[in-house]
Image (cartoon, rainbow, N blue to C red; front, top):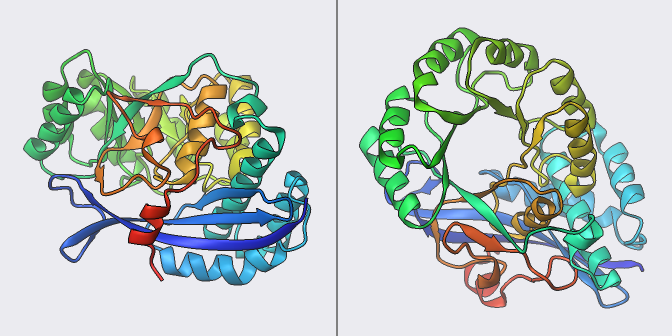
Length: 362
C-alpha cells in the first residue's frame, strides 16, 4: 500500500473560555491545530495531528518541506520502519521538540490507515476495550485569579465532569477551586514548569491540605527528573509529568529516578502511538500510572481516546472550552463528562469538511 500524497491542514477554530488568559490572539481566541492527511494508492486516507502550541506556521513549513517529501512512495503498512527512518533522518533537529511532533503526526496517520485496512477500530488493534465511553477530566485554561477559576470549576462540575485540572501557579487559586469543586470532585494542578525545586517544595506543602489528585510539572527545567524525584519524596501530593519528555529512553530515566506517580506522554509530541505503547509497558513495569496527556482537538485527541480505551486509562484529558466546531465531528464531542469511543474502522471518524472549509488557514 503505497503513500501517494501527504497534506498538512492548519485550522484556527474560535473558542470561548469565559475569561481565560491563554491563547488570546488580539481580541479573538482561536485554537490552532495542524492536521496531517496521508493518502494511499488503495484509496485509504489516514489522519494525524502535529502538536503546535503557538508555532503553527513554522511547524507547517517544517512538515511540508522536510517530512512530507520523504513519505511519498513508502509502504504505508510499514509503520515502524517509516518512524525509525524519519527519526534518524532528522535527529539533528532534536529528539524532543518540533521534529518529534511532525514524526508523531505521521505515526498516528499510519495507524489510522492500518485500522481502516483491517476493518477494525483502532482500539481493537491495540487489544480491545472494556468500555464504550471514557470519562474525561476538564482541562481548564489559565485564569490567574481565584474567583475566576472557581467559577469555571463550578461550571465544569455542572457540566458533568467528575475531575478538573487547573493550569495555575497561585496557591490561592487551588484553595478557591477546592471550595468550588467540593470534596467529591477530583482536582489536579498543572503549573507548566514554573518553579525551582525550593519553590515547588514550599508551594506543595501549602497545597497538601487540598487533596490534589496530582501536581503536574511543577519544576524548571522539566528534564531535571532528579529534582522532580526529590520533590516527590518531600510531599504527600502525587507527582505527574511526561508531556515534555521525548522517546522511550527519556521515560526510562524518569522511572528509574522515581520521579513520578503518573506518567503523561503526549502521542502528538512523544514519537506517536507506536512509542506510547512502549512507554505504557515500561510504566507498568515500574508501577507508574499511565495517563496520556491530550491537549488537542483534532485527530490526536481521537487517537488518544482509542489508546485510553484499550489501556483502561482512568481519565482522559479534554480542553475545557466551547469550540465553534468540533474538527472530528460531533460524535467525539463530550457529553456529561464522557466521550463515546468511535466504532468505525481506524479512528472511526474523519474531519468535518465544514470545519475545514470555515476555519482553514491558507
